[in-house]
Image 1 (tube, rainbow, N blue to C red):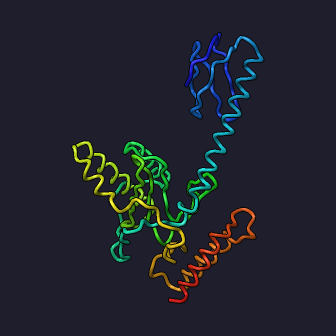
Image 2 (cartoon, one colour; image 1 turned 180 degrees about the vertical axis):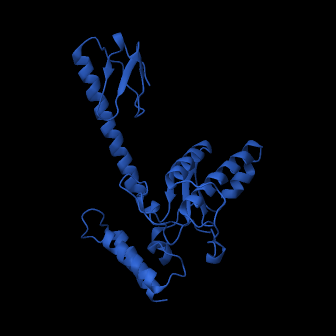
Image 3 (spheres, rainbow, N blue to C red; image 1 turned 90 degrees about the vertical axis):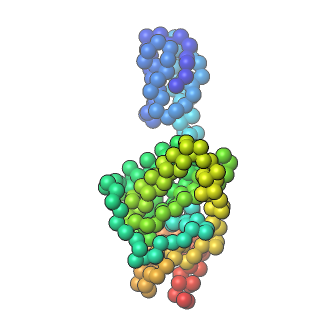
Length: 266
């Protein structure tokens, strides 16, 4: 919130985007989009109109910024990017978690909170769940063949990574990362920052998308059979084909083609 001048009688500045209102004296509150508002003289309707236009402009700029961030991170968020140097769990060792049932949405939100508490920024959550345009998973989709989850973020200007594929659902692997970050914060609180640095040593760099394994590109397990490989390839090729006006991507399509050729040529 921000201070404004001469806001008499609790006049309000409302927008269709969620707006900000001045409800008690000269204090702007309930600013749902977190904008800093300069001082306006609300004694006249012209100033009120000016404030409304200002808010709408800032909200529009914020939305464009969020869209740009999504476009930059989308190829890292889906399909799964597994950190270099991290071993995958063998299929027969994947187990059902004993955690309380939680949705993917709940687990992701708590993971974002834990990363912030840990001092992390620029979080990327990577999995094989298909994403909406806002970068969040589509609702109602089935569990992918590979339920692994990886996260990438920066902390003190250092890129860090964590990943988990021990459990049989995406949401449980997300929650395992929540618990891991909480444990790491506890270690740091107990005065062992060197252990934190050692825990992340060697896992800083994001993998090169051109060097990923074929099963990571296709979003299947390493020992996927021919039918699973073909089904994954057809779905991804349809979605990212350059002729697809909504989601086509030439670079991604070429990666999918290359991955499929590697898979069938084993």
